[in-house]
Length: 314
Image (cartoon, rainbow, N blue to C red; front, side, top):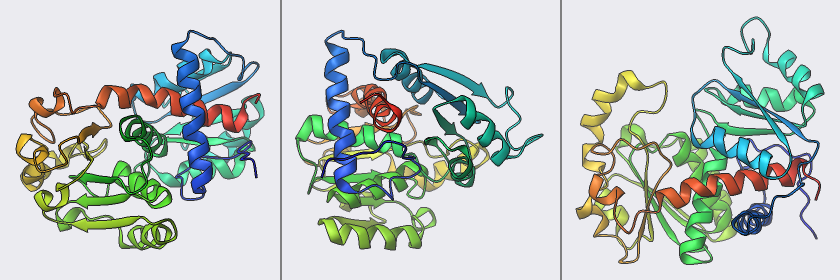
């Protein structure tokens, strides 16, 4: 049966079937080739999207904006000082107003409950550009990058090293469970993912041939890995915890010694921005194994695929 995602939200990927995720990835590949060929499209002609940002952004904001422009649409940036979301106006009222003016809404902020409430009341597709709990558009770009390097990701070993309960680690676990990957989180016990999400992803993974593991020893974790991933040790809003995190996570730094334990063709991934010298060394970040800028570019193509698939003129 053909995949049809028109009108769908993207809140966390948990409600997307494997074939729907693969459809988005294939569409992203086609849209990337189209852009590389210099072809401007009209798949979003007449479409307007609202970009709500509680948190600052480089890749997410630029990717959504350029994605719209490339296909003839318009993106309107709404920063936290531009609208009254959750202050003078509650979330559901903002959702109902914007839903009558825009064809889709992107939200990047703190609480997952906010993006879910926007989706409940907007009447148009709502896309999660990042919350404290999930970062689904990043996970799509990550898998696209791995596919470009290795082909089919089924059975591929991806190891996330560091803060194992942050939004990127969570989203990678969700998408790995759907696509049959071998996903390992290497983290101190204090930063393990929630048991509820772990159980959910393991159950989903069992249906698709995925292996989901969480272990403390980063050296054991990365042995034989095709992809090694890390993120900042203190996410946005956690800056006061940085000193504590540096002490806790120093053994989890992705350095040359750690990368040498992975597969000889292994790649290094990071969602950016990176704090070089903390979670990753300059040597690894700038090495031939590093695919962080290919990964950053792929944010554009996967986000474009999400917008086109859900509101576009396909």
